[in-house]
Length: 264
Ligand SMILES: C[S@@+](CC[C@H](N)C(=O)[O-])C[C@H]1O[C@@H](n2cnc3c(N)ncnc32)[C@H](O)[C@@H]1O
Image 1: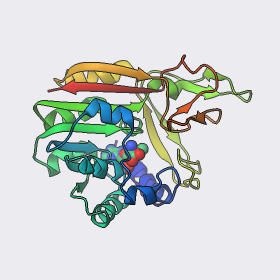
Image 2: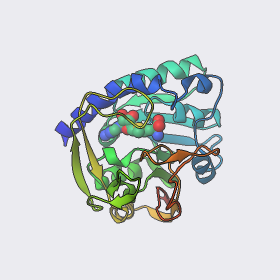
Image 3: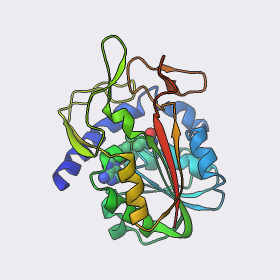
């Protein structure tokens, strides 16, 4: 898995400046004080004031700093050098007190020895991780007893659907867990330019995600499913006034996001 993760790290280093310049991420309004967390994340994680919070796969840190603005003692982790460098610059620029660590999720126990009240990860995370059992054991390792893990991510059903030329959404690939290789030169989920470098990505079924957390020793408190998306997964989707993307038809037929709360 080292080869695949090195390829992906290179891709995220290339993506970071493109994302930072995008309207999607809108860094300018964040600098003026915008909280970048969405209402599902804020409602489900709840009051974080004075809590210690570990944010896995934090990208360039706007969500981590937002948790810090909401009162958490927040630590963000990401394996991209460019993302962590930018997160630290933004943290200083806005006068926040979040901490950032550059590390692969899987190697984090080798560089950090602390327990947290909350471990959080969201939107666009699991498709970058080849090994869910190891991921869940890292979460278990960093939670204090009684602490809570929260994830909000793209629903795996979305990973097997494709949009036809007529705008219909159809099942087109394997739902169950498997690896995929993308050659590159493709646009990301933002409005920025295409990224030249390739990626490896992983589809994980909902059953495998829940089972990995349970096997690691965490107690699942809920598994929620939502019929909205945080970004435009398919061209036919439109953005609504509430900021969520939806299908023009079938809107209530597909879960597009899922969230889990699991406690140690
Ligand atoms: C889609 S972003 C997370 C996005 C976050 N919700 C946001 O919008 O800022 C995915 C992040 O995962 C990071 N990542 C991917 N694989 C990783 C790994 N194995 N260890 C640590 N970070 C990883 C990437 O560098 C990237 O910053």
